[in-house]
Amino acid sequence: MSRALLDAPDVARVVDRIAHQILEKTDGATDTVVLGIPTRGVPLARRLAARVHAFEGVEVPVGVLDVTLHRDDLRLRGVRALESTVEPPGGVEGKLVVLVDDVLYSGRTVRAALDALRDLGRPRAVQLAVLVDRGHRELPIRADYVGKNVPTSQAENVRVLLAETDGRDAVLLERQEVAAR
Amino acid sequence: MKHLLSAGDLSRDEALTVLDTAVRMDEALAGREVKKLPTLRGRTVVNLFFEDSTRTRISFELAAKRLSADVVTFSAKGSSVSKGESLKDTALTLEAMGADAVVCRHAMSGAPHRLAGWVRGSVLNAGDGTHEHPTQALLDAYTMRRRLGRVDGLRVAIVGDVLHSRVARSNVLLLHTLGAEVTLVAPPTLLPVGVAEWPAAVSYDLDATLPKADVVMMLRVQRERMGQAYFPSEREYSRRYGLDRHRMGLLPDDAIVMHPGPMNRGMEIAAEVADDPRRSTIVEQVSNGVSVRMAVLYLLLGGAQ
Image (cartoon, rainbow over all chains, first blue to last red; front, top):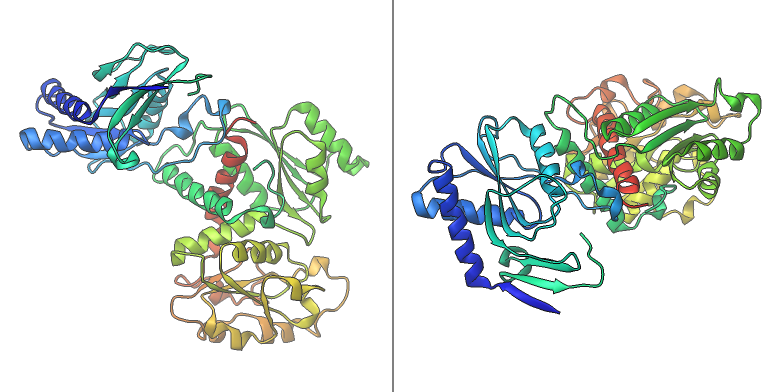
């Protein structure tokens, strides 16, 4: 059983809106970098940077932040594959870093990202952009930019599809037997 | 993957996963002031060394510490083993103390295998007798891939005391899995019985092999394991099977020279070859060893047990 929360044009609109909000809240995206959290945070970060560039001509450096080695829930699942961490050109020292992920749920990924980020340097400030906030936070973490707030039950699963990784853009709400994440 | 006992147990995909994970470990620590990741916090790794070792023991210890595991190192000397405790009783003791992984080096081939049947945690073979040394083979493959960009299709000559070498056995198995062509070069007395069954070619002539090798791996002549004469004199061995500067000149331009260490300089490898900055990877092998062992520890201990 699955139900579409966002279709492809919705995703594009949401990305556009977040790009505008970033420009608004970061003073025209000066000294700002975006860091995508693998897997789907990475193409989202690239799209946000591309839209920011399209709207105001500002180049926002893009990086990749793999948080796996910093997770506190590794023991709950099988071994996770590691992805490359790529520092954005110019680094993160003294910058405003916008972390980008697809779904905000327990907040544990973001907590791990904050730890992983500390290894790259000391940003001036850190903000968080997510495509979907589905609630059920286990930590005191909130997003600065949210594509869509979706009240969910823990028996449901939010699946984000992106053209770069899945061939098409969509956000689906799926019912499942056991909530796994 | 639960244990790492033999390089032959690794499928091609598993071996490549270890090598890729090692690259990530390298990247995660490169240029960092504090070389520490929180990944294995709360896990206990026991280094169980029944045989002398410097680099492997320190390398495993460092790898575990960089991943924030708690490390206990146990050397047979000065322990209950010197009072006559059996391997099984030692294993049960470790089990009672709650080791998540046991890294085992033992003079008897097969000891880590027995150990794996007695403990709940993962067992990593850090060298057992003349049998295997899988993490050495992994770090060698990692070094080849870093230097030459690939392992698949490489022509690798493994030269010297193959008979007593667990490094050679593990390398033959792993390199074959990864698609390299291995040639063993040694005097007939230093080749094991049944070498014809190994997935490798055999040659007695080093000079004929060198011009067709992308990698030449020199093995240490293991005098401590030799009860009898395997060759007439050290000088004759060195003349026929030692890698000196003249022989190094026979290698193709971008070929590399490897040695698992410790070296007998002047015996199987000349000092000027071992120190050659362009071809020798001997020092790199040591630092790569830490990354590869971090990768193995992560893959064995990093998920749900």
